[in-house]
Image 1 (spheres, helix red, strand yellow):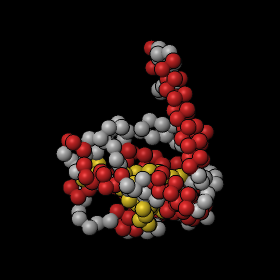
Image 2: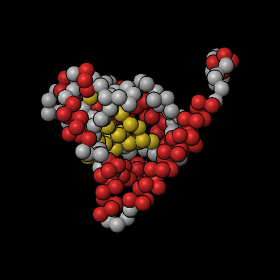
Image 3: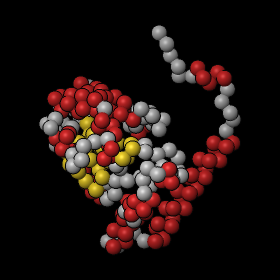
Image 4: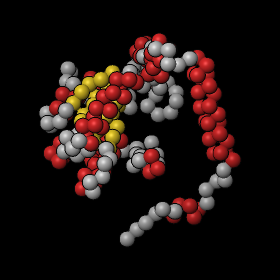
Length: 225
């Protein structure tokens, strides 16, 4: 959750997921005021739209025509609370956003190409000064809310539901498409997976061999007035 990499334009994230929405909107305002050719893309979940700050940010972005994309990953759960227990039935999130006067769309979040094409269009629109776009991507998380395990046994969802969604793997779906179009091969896949595994193992080795933090590290990058 706590990631930051300015070298690739990643402005940071925190465990207060919906809290990133107004921050991202502020970044988009900054780009607009500075006439910078940059576009903000902020990811949020279906539960984030239950926060007032989300809609306040969307309203402000639409009003000011800010260069930002609100990308809602609707996986139907907030931690362990199903969507139907939190929001009225038959109410579509992207339709709610539409009421704020910005273009909205609902897509298959498990289809890599659909996500790519939709995002491309939203970025192009923002760069032309036409303002924000709201995307609702229907997807699913196979694992538990926290960590890599499966917490379905706790009873908040049916394990059969997880098995159903596991057949819609974004990576495998793209791989099958590329194979069909003769744009990729099993040899290419094996090579890519080998390089990814090596990178992960290298990261683990670096973490394990690194020295423990010192007490003075607590005061690094900490400021007060």
